[in-house]
Amino acid sequence: MGIEIVDQLPTMGQVYARTVKTLGRKAKNPVLPELTLVKHGAQADAQKLAEFRRAVGARMNGQLPSLYVHSLAFPLAMSLMVRDDFPLPLLGMIHLTNEVTVRRPLADAEAFDVAVNAEQLAKHAKGATCDLVVRISTEGEERMVLRSTFLSKGVKLDGPKPEKDARSDFHPPQATAVWKLGADTGRAWAAVAGDYNPIHLSKVSAKVLGMPRAIAHGIYLAARALAEIEPVGVGYEWEIEFKTPVLLPGTVHLAYEQEGRDYEVTAWNPRKLKPHFELELELLD
Image 1 (cartoon, rainbow, N blue to C red):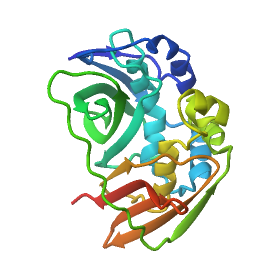
Image 2 (cartoon, rainbow, N blue to C red; image 1 turned 180 degrees about the vertical axis):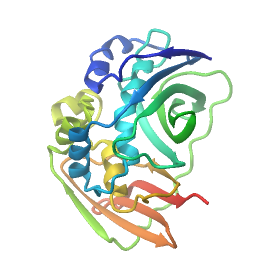
Image 3 (cartoon, helix red, strand yellow; image 1 turned 30 degrees about the horizontal axis):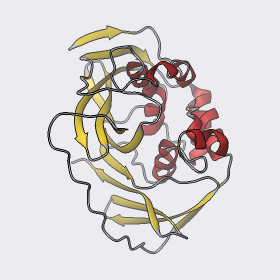
Image 4 (cartoon, rainbow, N blue to C red; image 1 turned 120 degrees about the vertical axis):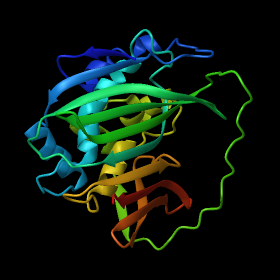
């Protein structure tokens, strides 16, 4: 796999300016590029970090929230997706899951290296999935691995088509928290994270991409769910699976269930009784 060193991390705005050229991609039997993009010496921006914490209610504990690191590094992963040799269209991809391992947390002012690549292209009942992987290290020690899985609808891969996963009945637990999300939630988070995907910004722009109203950013939902439970000073891992989008404005009910030092978080629509996401967090031994 080739390695390309970059001088600086791009912003989401810089990446989105280049997404239009990916709209015409209609890949059949696509192949992901065997390339890793690397940025040495990345560091948190103190003002942006403070804005992130205020937006999701994260604690000021001297430790970088894992999804702040994701928000800082992920534009580099997206810049991989808008290259000419990346076969899938960026706009319209559906965010399915995040899996994050924090082997040793980063301090607020600590410098770190970022490496990103795409891998694990796989068939899906509705198209194909691939993983964008961000690896964070300091002096050769891997500190974090942040894996995001996306679905590209309509992409064809050779071989039998997988069957759709059977949906089990959802029975919501006892709610322990309620979020009231306004119509401007997507725009407010875009101002913090730089993610100006039009599906999150307004009813008009979301309809162009097939949604009846703007939807909340998955990373915002995950970061807010993690704000009170992300461990300090120890290794941990967490995973979130997105089930149905949160339409804006909207109300979300949540249940935080703790077993020992581990957590499960379930979020759902209280009117339709449909799950929005399920998150699990476990400490590493």
